[in-house]
Every structure is written in structure tokens, then in C-alpha cells.
Amino acid sequence: MEDEEEGAAVGRKAMMTETAFKPVGYLVSTKEGMRGERGAFYDYVTAENGVFIEAEGRFLAARVQVAKGVIRGLAPLEPALVLRHGPIPQHLFDLALSAMLIDPEQERYVAVTWADGYHITVPEQEVSASSVVYEVPDDTVLDLHSHGGMRAFFSTTDNRDESGFRLFGVVGRLSGNPQLRLRVGVYGYHHAVTWDEVFAGSLEGVDDLLTARPALELLPEGRFAVHLSRMRQFLGRFGS
Image (cartoon, rainbow, N blue to C red; front, side, top):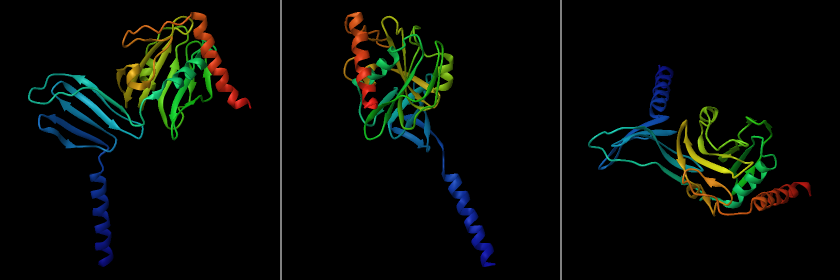
């Protein structure tokens, strides 16, 4: 009899644990504050101006709008992005761009990862003029890939593949004046962000298409020479 009661108690405890665990939360943004219960992975929030998704992780916290609308009586929200370890240093983007400029007609992938600091990681990849195949490294904060000579845009393939929770970027027009687009992704929903929201430092020789800010003036031959020199220095660390 005691064994039966003990077994029933364990079963009830397991059911309570399963009930208590909520992978997704649903909240309402009221004028008095948030109402509702947060989930373990992410939350949907209904606000005056639509529905948003929020998530927090080791590297960033973000809020992205899922759908626009007007819901009277609630408080409005805005998209938001916080990098928990601060902005990414400019020189890491310079190194990534240098790696892409080695063969500007091919698509390439570079990751900014975190391991007690931001680092550049270039995994093994299969490249062509229209695609790049790779495995996303562990602890990736920012996915960067190039579109070779094409303009910088997020393709249908990008929208399908970029379903995780991190930053994403695409670099285009590598054979001319390079272009950059950045966005934050929260499990399949995306919001465009500017260079200044992600990086510390100035964007040199590349157009940020979101702000329509032209590149800082550099001599055309000087831009490539500078980036190739940086990449040779970077690769030289592994040859010694």
C-alpha cells in the first residue's frame, strides 16, 4: 500500500513539473506593465501596435515585431536589441570582409563567435558563385555571408535557413563598392538593425544599406590593399 501511495506521489510530482515548464510565454503589454507568464525559450507579447516576440540568451536579448496592428487600451512596444557583451569591435568585421574579398565572385561565410571575447571563426565550407554550404560554429553571435558580386539582400534561402536566435549579416557588391545589411533573428522572425547597433567603430569602405549611409571615402585600390593586408596578417598567425 505504501509503495502504491509513493508511486502515485511521484507521478503527481512529474505531472506538476511538466505542467510548470512552459517553453513559450504569452504576455500582454498594459499601461501598468507586463501581464502574463514568461516562457523558458521566448515570449509572444501583445501590445497596442501589434504582436512581438522576445527572447534572452547568453549573448543577446531582442524584441522583434511579428505582426502590426492596433489594439486599443494596451501600451505600445518597439523592437529592441541588447548585446550582453557589448558591441562587436570593428576590426573583426574588417577581417571578415578581407576573407570575402580574397575571391569576391564567390559566396563565403564567416562567424563572429564568443569565447571570453569576440572572435572570427571560418568553418569548412563549400562555396560557389551563388551559394555557400557550412555548419554554424558553436557560440555564434553573428552569421556573416557574402553574395559575391550581387547586391546585399536576404534571399528566400536566407530567410529559411536563418531561423535561430542571433545576428545575421549579408555583404554584397564585393567586386565594386561593398554593401552591408544586418538584422537580428528571433526564431524565424527578423528585424533590420544598423551598423551602430551591432559594431563599435566606423564602417569603412562599405555602404550600410539600412541607413543609406555611404561608405567613408577610400581609394578603390587602397580599400582592397588594406583588407588583403589585414587578411594576410590574420592567416600568418596560423602559418607560424
